[in-house]
Length: 324
Ligand code: AHM
Ligand code: MG
Image 1: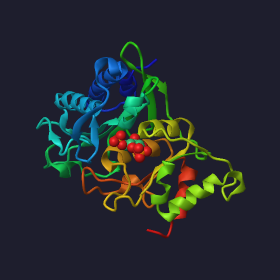
Image 2: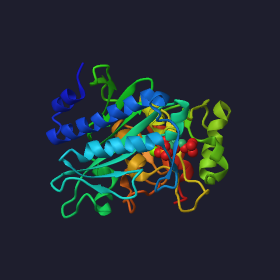
Image 3: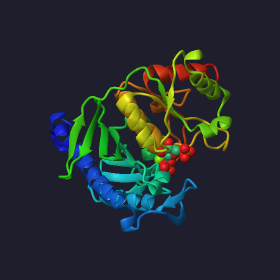
Image 4: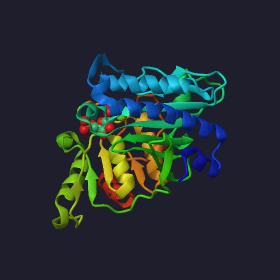
């Protein structure tokens, strides 16, 4: 079985990028160990702090952020990092070439109930004339990502990675190596499974309400088939399911807060997951435009998301057409 670095080297990935991804996995292995210890290590529960998003931080949000920040900033290739848990980007090495953007622990509402969580990451090159402390350096479209991925901490720890030529999955072995377990992941174009937090239904736009109402009618309705529903409340787990067996996942725009077009964040969640989905032949949209085409204007900006099986996402978008 091939290790992660063997696989990337065979793919002729830039050696600096291989080094950087290896460093990211050093941090993720440490996070996996802390998660596995759970209550034994006293890491469950919340802190007294809220992050820049106004959310209460879990102890493990803070631990995962500190681990990633320290490990990545120690790598001389890193010009700076931006994190969902940091107010502002943090500068790294002045000679560094890469910017690392991460959601240290996605789905952290699931930590205390021992359900899957994950780390999501996105890698960009530092634009000329800017430093890793400049927010502007990070405000690149999702298409500019040189790599993105996540580590799902579930029954097994799985790295899902793209460097722009397909999607591959690596499982963390007891030896500490990530070993290639799924090559060239492809999402089926059609599906009978959707994933959305139904409790927010009354806050959605009528277009999304109509689309989901039609799915719920099953084989009697206009879609002509019975759909199953799943909601883990960890985007990493939902995207992993979509990549593994197809499906549509959405966290759509809702009217709870007019300043927030959806709950998920473009730079930490939308873009890295969008690139994985597109590289696996799926589709990733806001319901109105391709996520990867958005010109970001803020490091913490929110975005509505509908992603997964190509034909199903296209059907969802048809309900929204003409409402731009
Ligand atoms: P987080 O990054 O603070 O954990 O929030 C993102 C998570 C996603 O993983 C998940 O899809 C969503 O929030 C669940 O939200 P809800 O609790 O509204 O169902
Ligand atoms: Mg998140």
